[in-house]
Length: 215
Image (cartoon, rainbow, N blue to C red; front, side, top):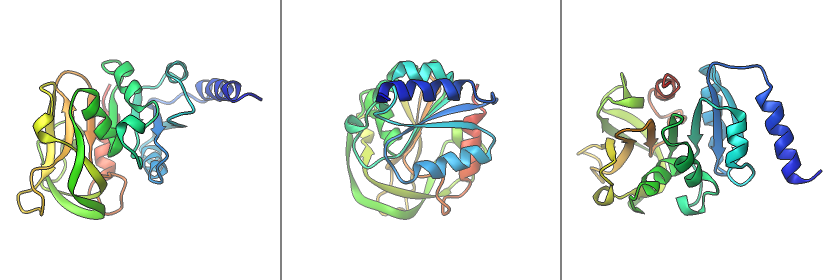
């Protein structure tokens, strides 16, 4: 069976599966943490359909009729993340979109921000971040303890006017003021640089639940 035919048949099967109130398409950027996020979303009652970033098309995603989109973490840059940036472009303003780590960086880059090397590589390290209480951060502890796995960040100085910072590393962090969360000012698009699914991140379920509440 040709690969394209196999993908189309899988899409048809998923579209005709038992309907769910929240149907999430997870675009997997070949990351080991993707399925931890999928598990969290499933625990919150979402119907999650996971597809690799180079094994599905925009038309395939539309055929799945998702209510929400999540762009996963990954080991590369946004430019190397398969369909990720195209998905953000195409579905912006049509569906709620959440970017996690690499997905967060992809949102920044799509709208003109620069993704640059972070001052310090973070691999499984916790940080206390501060946030505005908006969007996915509504009702969460402030400051919030989160877990970070990244060597790149969205550069604060290049952030376009259409995006606003929703979370940042606190003043007592070794590298204060780094962007840890952002959102589009008019569209339902948000990103978090840290990993909400990490066991060391406080209130990760609550953060993802806030995302699923979006219409």
